[in-house]
Image 1 (tube, rainbow, N blue to C red):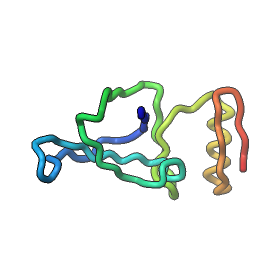
Image 2: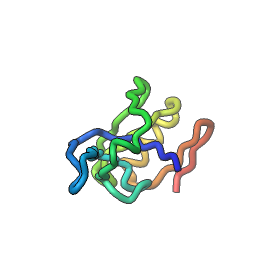
Image 3: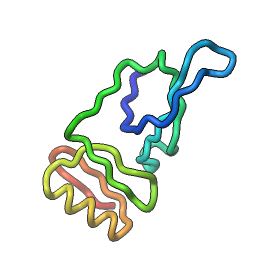
Image 4: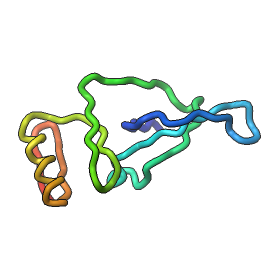
Length: 98
């Protein structure tokens, strides 16, 4: 199974009882993943990238938002979500407020 996560690398350590290492990541987006931090064995990481288009928005709830902003309407709707505490669903071509 392949999984892509937007995250910030926090720590690196040896896996207890093993000679392999793992990294701890801060995932943010708790409303999507259900957790803030996760340990991942480095042997399971295929690639780490740092897209220049990616953004980090600090929120009061659900951890930081890691991802992409698609257009000005998305920025305005993200601000609306933050101010009104509503959930928002964004796609490349549309948006919906729940």
